[in-house]
Image (cartoon, rainbow, N blue to C red; front, side, top):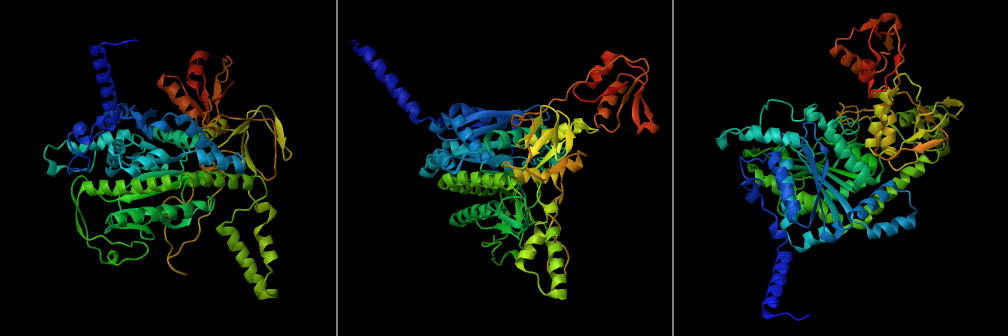
Length: 630
């Protein structure tokens, strides 16, 4: 086909436009100043979530380095967003890499297959912000990180995008909206304060939204757990917080003892490596003030938080606590913080501290972890696989998890034997520590015929949202001489997330932690015990031997819908069992409609409905699994 000069000129112009557009693809993403009207980190300036959401959508639409995903709705109905950042080539194969990350975390493949997968995969790194909305650095470093990933074209950033998949997650949209609007309501910048907003920054829990991750009661927590434990399985989870101890800038890993003895030993060792990478980068960039270990109060014991629950899923959870405020503040002179030691190798001078400095420190931490993940991509994937395999193997045989109580009992026996007849031999000590009745359970059975089975279903839902592999019996079965009805749930110990399973079923045994021998105790950082099965009053049986049955695996992360039970017509009325928690929910629905309700003290406080039409009662019972007894 022949073209005239004008046609050739048009085609050449079009080609030049396309080449120019390809070369300027990253520049098309708007800067924060273009979108918000100020730079992130400017003193006295905060962005709210409405503005942030619009910015994320603009960047995702303009840049080929991002895919925007909605994790779900918040408690107040906002969209909770996650930006997935990587190279355009990786994003074109995103589902493939996501599935590969899940296979490595579930650890069901053999070693050779796992090595081959690790060679092909990309490291998955989670970076969040905004969980505690009064800690304003978190949400704003997330905005700036998005912009940096969209606009930077240096060799390190290109390598990071090639080797990693970065999940940039907003942890509390409602809270950012509240706090930013509250702060910015004052027209005079110097008069702006963050104190005393009119309501909680998470509708139901406020600050304790970071105590919910093992329970998954809040909508935001459910969204985040689904993303972490049922879809993406990141090898590193970075949870931004503030503030640091006085006289420092930022708390980084590793953290102080004790660490939870249910988690794999590779977790605390891995945190040391991540902490070293972060500390070195701070020193390389001339940013002093990073503190770790006993320089702060944070440990790796408790399971309730966004960064601690990953430990029980073989993921390296990173917490930083940074100083900073949109209103300039002071880093005070603390003499004890000015002498370098292993906790604080580079003390920071007393000074006036500006918001942008906190943003810059947060970016340094982000890039340190992303650089580490890029350089150790294959090893991170293999490590999460190996930890999963360790858990599966421990759950497949007789095993004993050491605990402070068991070790104290063995110590007493050794001391007694030493006084009476000489020291015990090593084999005898080993026997003391491996009593048959003290071995770990091979699994747990949650009977369907317990009094409050609807609450047991909710417990199973919490496990499901934590990525635990759960099975359900399709028919009646017998284990260890006991019969169980169809519909009972089974949680086996031979699975990758066994540490989390044990933590949800077994009581915690916190180590004794004293300032010195015979001295005062060091308080745990947070709750020392949180056995969810106990807290919810769920009945279950430990199974101490290998077992099988007519068990069908539930889809990972699938919530269980309570069965609506039929209601027979009765002229004498109905009883609702007060031992069933959701009976109260049913009763409240009926009271709101003017139905008469009585209590029967002689029947364990059962609720009695002397007269209610069947259709009305069925509506009140819907979705609860509560049985109305004639």
